[in-house]
Length: 448
Image (cartoon, rainbow, N blue to C red; front, side, top):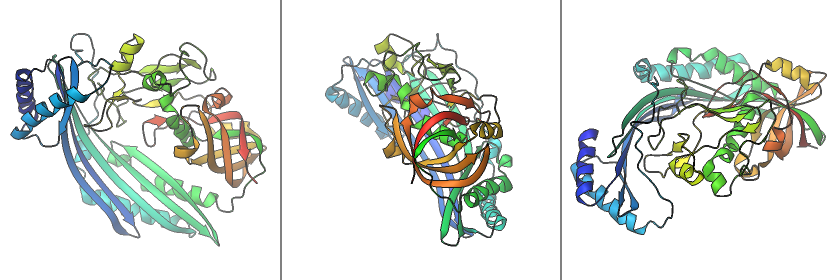
């Protein structure tokens, strides 16, 4: 059944069954992905999905239900399941169905490329195979290459009985290459990513070169003596650490006692050289949208301004608890998932220094190009981390050799209070969190 007709019937039956305010959240997704290994298609995914989540107020309580089948017989099931669900939900939080029709300004955001949708699957498969071959051809020490390439598209619609009728469509493509280099008994791996809405921007040579050069540059890596080192976190590592601790900025985490930022608004929580932005209006990012999962208009906001905490990230429920307005950061991981709080496109604002300049300013220390174990070695509540890492030793401002088998440890907020330089190499490679390279005054390193 067509979505609008289905929702009209859903709301009509809901009203007859005693619901007051109601909402339908609809998500439609299409996915293509191909994996290539040893010149053969190693994996192939072509998927299409559609789902609708219904929620509504009945007798002052919110009930929920969902379906993947937008057929006539699903209408009654959704209403009855939501009514039954409302009876067993035991929460003191007051939820609401949002009406922002008169107060919110919804930005125009072009997130959909018709040209990307027209790229044939055969072209994407050929591109992935060519990327693999280019990587092998770059260096005889390359022993294994694995490539993945794909694109996704989707549309989100939110309709409710308070006048909201919103829709947003977007698509995106990304690629990934993993390279293993071998010399004698020494084996090292490296990865490279690229994403864009323009298939013409996917360059085989650059991506292959990035992964191969990094893998081969790590051959012969050894550990270093334990101690306190000046450290340059390359942009991708800085991005990964920011993503790991991004939940600290969620009002939901703060209200549950799962963040150190309680009562910190307006206070300095890191170096004045750090400004953190959450921007849902970047046209080239897959998380960008003119409205959030509750229908609140999104906007660009400064989360940390020159080291000071400017705002937490809110949905409607957390905003009501704090007596503030929602920041438009309501999030649903899937159409049938609960509403939480999450950043859209969170990033540390770029500085003015090129990467080579930061390496020179490092003088004697370490460049960290990868960390491992963020799922177990980092505590988003306390901000503490202890992570396996590897990178390069720098002496007199020059890279002298690769380093592995080390562990870096510290506290995220303390580390960002000890910034000595911010790079200009901000780049969203993958995910929704990004950072330029960051020069850290000192960090504890465990080695041999």
